[in-house]
Amino acid sequence: MGIHQYKKKILPDNEFVLGNIAYLKEGNQCRLLDARRTPGFIEDYFTESAIFRWRITDFEDKGKYWDVPAENIDHFQVGKLAKKLNEDKINEINKTIAKYQDILNIKINEKESAKTESAITHCSENIEKWLKKYSKFIKSKKKLNLKKQTGPVFLSDDLLAYMQMVEMGEMEGITSRKLVQNPHYWEWIKGMRIILGEMGLVLWQIRLLLVQLYSLTSQLGTSQMALG
Picture (cartoon, helix red, strand yellow):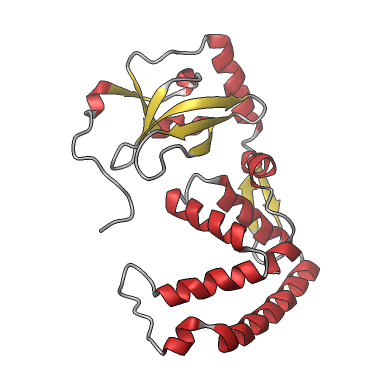
């Protein structure tokens, strides 16, 4: 059984048109071009960053939202009678989109990289000590079956217990939910990638739009917090 819900009967694609900038109007119903055609609506549009908020109205993520770059409206379908923006507003959005097309290179900082690698080593040693002393999974002497869709409950309990001990439980919960909900759109994950670049772990190229999204919505904290 999959982790996502589905409906057998949905409206056919010919009842909709492909989304474009003209349809970025608050209140417009639109559905994602995924296999199940997840429904939702445009709740808000953020002028400064050319991002729209899409609120999900069905399935396991009902009530949650995605903040989506305006140009990705073509990943959605809208109803044929959906309201349209005027030409001035369309031109304004296109100009904002163009402003964020440049690429920002986050180069590896050798000093930060060495500091991060040292912190990772220290963190790994602490985790190993904790597992040997407190791990329910290790004490159960059960083996990890990588072929199963779900992992051992004891191992999950170990992860949650450790993350809560280092005051990272909330961040772990958010990250897990966002990865399941949508690893491609959610800017929390992209924000974490930016942090990896700033910590000197990877050479990272990223569009300025995503930096803007990160500063608006992620607020992940410092590398010191991330390592505990």
